[in-house]
Length: 91
Image (cartoon, rainbow, N blue to C red):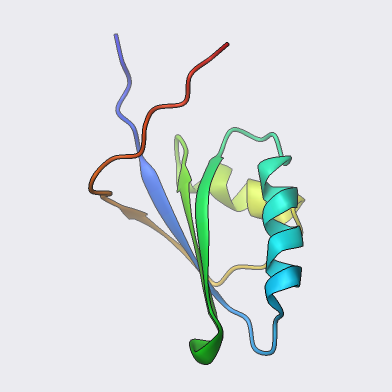
């Protein structure tokens, strides 16, 4: 039986952050290994905002992934995504 896929948006206010710093943080996120699948991140420099999309069982797991990656966040909210990203395949 398939489980419901849940998606979470992480919001960050990051004044004066560089794109390279965000790129390094995203690399750490992808290696965090705590059950949250990082799908993508958007940096909006003019707004000093960074948004990341995750697939995970719950917001707690997403928070733990960001903590391990040392990528500060301001808020995590559950969202609906259209179209849904492809499901991760297990090798």
